Length: 369
Image 1 (cartoon, rainbow, N blue to C red):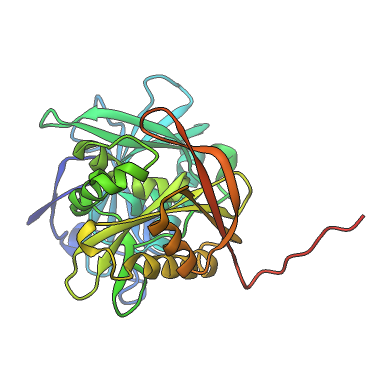
Image 2: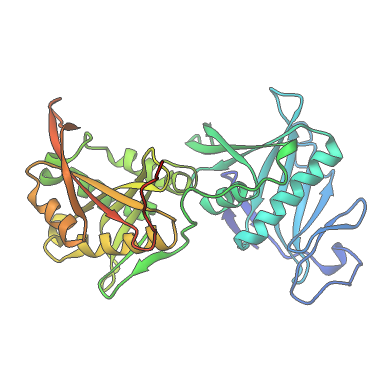
């Protein structure tokens, strides 16, 4: 038996379930798990297996527990707890604890079929679930299965530590309306070349990203006050959620030869659809190696080929020659100066030197009368 931390924020014991404890039905393909509902033995999905049980750890807080079982092994791969909402009689709260690796498509089908089952069995109008903020794979699957992001809530865990949870909901009439992620799901490197790679920021990158934005040169040209280590850590924990629902995606720049985090690059959505604003920064000791230009070129490929962007923009404060040089070497064109657009730390405003890059695979035309 071993332990892992689940999406509810508590330690979970994982154990293999004996074949005799599962279902007598043998009609399933080898290595393909099946979902059953134990009351009817009706197959509701062909990815995982779920079973209702009244044997709950706390009957006051949970009305049902669903075991999610990979039958081909067989092993217990998760639990889903159902409980009534304290504030809304028409809602059911879903606490999801999937503690074994499952593909995104499998989890998406699992959540979608489970939701249909809950609406049919309990005649509820709304299903709600709270997921730890940094469990971005489960968050992605919830969104793809039709759930809507409602906000962030905070709770104390068993160690009296304050944790953040993303709140999602699904209405009865939305079970067939899957949603899309703002940015494509990122599990590993987005793109890489012989020198650097880009990946979603992780907690271990906290010091690098804090150091990059707090050094005198970055602070001089930056738009915002220097964030604390805790603020950076919180931002990184939220970056998977932010990449799914907005407003941005935060990527770490990795040096391939050492595996070191050497900087960051960000895309922020702006008002016109498929237009993104780019920001970047490199640690002082890695400047002058061309890493920022490489990161910009890799980001363009991903943004245009995978994320569906039509236009990328970036703004540089007037006088920041080094950053302008990066934009120019990255193929961005100067579009003009925007007076008084970028805020300085002393409350004054700088002119913005505005650059852009168009997706070469998109056609552009003027709309005629």
